[in-house]
Every structure is written in C-alpha cells, then in structure tokens.
Amino acid sequence: MKTLDAGLAAHLAGGVTTLARCWRVIRRDGVVLGFTDHDRDLTFDGVTHRAASGFTASAIQSDLGLSVSNLDVEGALSSAAIAEADLAAGRYDGAECLVHLVNWQDVSQRVLLRRGWIGQVTRGRSGFSAELRGLADALDQTIGRSFERRCAWNLGDTRCRVDLSGPGRRATVTVTAVASRIAVAVAGIEAFSDGVFDQGRLVWTGGANAGLEAEVVAQRGGALTFLLAPPRGFAIGDTAEVAMGCDRRFATCVARFGNAVNFGGFPHMPGTDFVYSYPNQGQGNDGSRLG
Picture 1 (tube, rainbow, N blue to C red):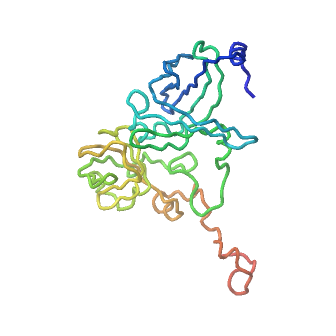
Picture 2: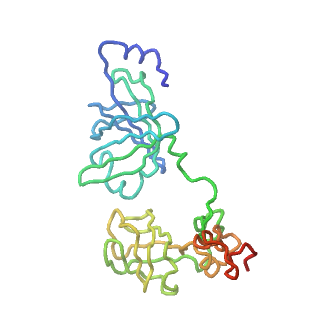
C-alpha cells in the first residue's frame, strides 16, 4: 500500500489532475539518467528527467504474494537519451530503476510507484523495449549448492581461488586481421595451446571497444571467436587482455590449474542411469561400497 503526502492526496482527490510518470535509471557504473512522459523536463532529487527521450510505458502489473511484478518501458534510440552502443555494450544490464508518479505543476507532490531492476532489453532499428523486474525477482535466483558433476564456481572467484593474474595464465593480444563480426586473428597467443582460452574473458584495452568485456568461445590457430559481436566493429591494431578459460570439468581443473582441492562440483557422483537401475549382483549396483 502506498502512502501519499497530503498535497498529492488532495491533488488526486480533485476534479482535474496534472500527473506524469518519471523513470530514474541508475547504472552499475554509477551513471544516473532521468526520463519522463511529460512534454517538458522535470527536476527533483537533483536529477533532471528529460522529456525528449521518447519514453512510453505499459500498464504496471502487480501480483499478490511473492510473484514478480513487471513493467515494460519502450523508447527511441537517441544520442541525447539512450544510445544504441550503450545498450549493445550491456551498460544497462542489471541497472536499478525507480518509477515515480509526479504532479508536474509541483514536483514535490510525488510517490514512488515501483522500484526494481532492468531485465531483458530488446533492440530494434530505431527503438528499444526494456523489462523492469520487481524486487521479488531476487527470490528467483538460485541460492545454495546444486549437486552436479561440473564446477559451480566462476573461474578466479573467491571460491575457485585460481589466480588468473599469475604468469602464463593471461596474454596481451593485438588484432592482426578481422575474419567476421565475431572472429579475429590476433598476435600474442602463439605460446599457448589451442583451447586454453576457450570460455575465457577478454577485456579490450585499445580501440573502439576499449573497457568492454567479451567471452571467448574458441581459440584455434591464433584466432579468437567470441560469443557475441561487440557493439562497435573490430579494427586491426585493437588491443586486449585475455585470460584463460575453464570448461568446469574436473579433469581441466586438475590438469590446467592444479586446483582439485577447490573444485566446486561432484565429479564422482553416479549418473542417472546408475541411480535408476535396479540392484543386480555382480554389476556393482548391489548397495555395496564403490571402488
């Protein structure tokens, strides 16, 4: 239930209202942007909510209980508001979003309608649509451990403990040829075997994509193939830092990193065929100790 201040309550109780909706987007890199569906800019809390952003919004969906409430926001791509390159680079992924209902004649009369995070973003030729997920979305995230053969940790995190900054585990590369929108030939990885950088993370340090990350799908014969195309095209001479990858298998963890003690999976867990089969003497599934 929303609590309204006396001024806004009186305004809503009147015969005529002057209301607008305002969106405030707080990106993970600290950038704060404001937008409104009113025909002029509105400023409050030190943020100017721009009217020239071309924003429209769907009806707000609210559900009882712990169901996730959603709101879709659509807008035009413009350099003054939301740039296509920023959307493609993922700068709005997971950004916090606040939706206010405001009396545009007196912006001190306002109420916070919804607070959440930006979820799926769909881009078109001249516009975009962003899903705003409610606070209950955090309850849908997996908490705790799952019993599975492959490792559950992210390579290099505090649970994995592999030091990717160590010698021989990363390389500085320079683009020497552009094969496609997702593949380049690079110099700097000649000393590494093919596949070492599969599922690795690359950070561009020079060129149009400087500061952005990319996931390496395959590394073969001095060429890198990426999962997604970068927001801006590759160019010969672009530089980057690339770190080793991991396919989350126990054998890779042992052979490549010598990190068996921190492996986050259960490699010796019996498979489903073994678990569901019936006891049969002499076939190792009679309830006795394995190995």
